[in-house]
Image (cartoon, rainbow, N blue to C red):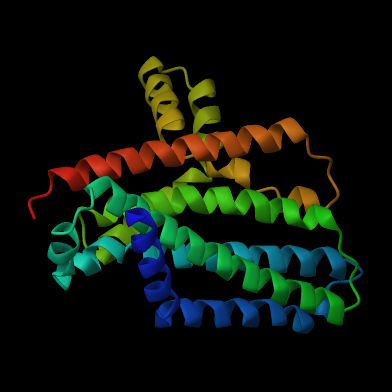
Length: 253
């Protein structure tokens, strides 16, 4: 009940955020821009428009997670509403979890709105779509769960700008972890190999969640890969939320 109260309060407050509205509008504009590049596609317009639409949904929802999530905890501290909330019979980990679930619900609704817009673009351009286009969106939800957890984690001890920067850096590096692993394998320096292996396992491996290119180009995707990626996303998210709760518990309010 206490987590639910924080969840719905966070959801309602975040849905009114101007940044959220601006980003969703930007997402629609990006998808609509596919009409402009259609004549330049040279017979590949279907693949390009699908890829552009999925990329727009990915980009916008990630930006929402970073910019909205990075302000959640700090905003409560800045407005001193945190003192009122924690004075009530609610545990600090429940507050963190409620904030996280509230933002995740915002992201799910935003993704759903953008997905409907993407479907309308495909319909208006007479581009056939199938259920496989839902697979990148399914994995995107679990990728967003990690990014949201990271944004919450950083927001517990740095400013919103700092939280946004750190989360974006990890998002960027998270798509390069495979390259980091390969670099360590070809390196002859044992120290570098140990370091690359360490960062490979501790940093979020977000490249596994990016399958839109495979879907657009009709590359077969193993069900086991999908399941493993989902499990990885859940476990990594749980770990980040645990450390977020630990840090928040130690703060002096």
